[in-house]
Image (tube, rainbow, N blue to C red; front, top):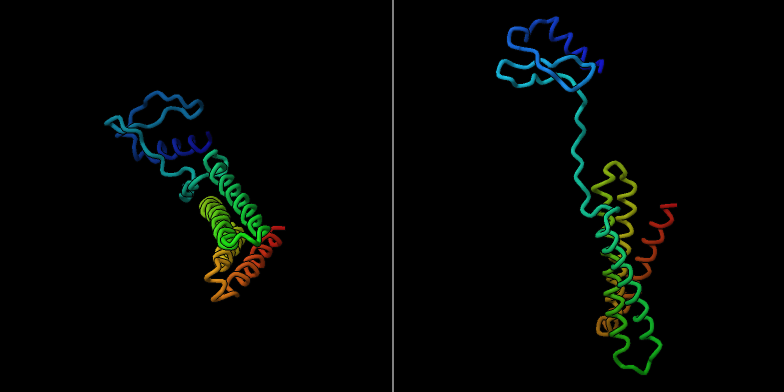
Length: 185
């Protein structure tokens, strides 16, 4: 209210707009009546609140049901495929069991990578000043990507040719995700 009075006093004392303005009614109590230009257009105040920088809306905000459904669905898919992938190893007589297991782990790893990517996109867009959070989630994304590589590394034809791909993918992926989780605490 005081700021509005200060503007009105400044304009009336300077007399800059007195000849062009006329008084009209207003619904803002305590501010007096605003100055209007002769054509009936309101006079723009030169001072006011400082505009804030544009913050883009999140891709899928956390509080939205769609964001939670996608995230939960990816976690569920990853967990179920890991469970069935592990179960395949309990039947060594099943010739295709190792291949099915590797593919199930690959799908599950992609699913967990999807969760991390969704969180990275969301938090980068909504928490612009929290660079440590961006780096932390990016480290978790790297770990999930290494899990994808490690899972694919256990597909029988690749495991026979390059056995370290699967092993290093899981070891380095676990190290990245473990570091990310420890960093949060």
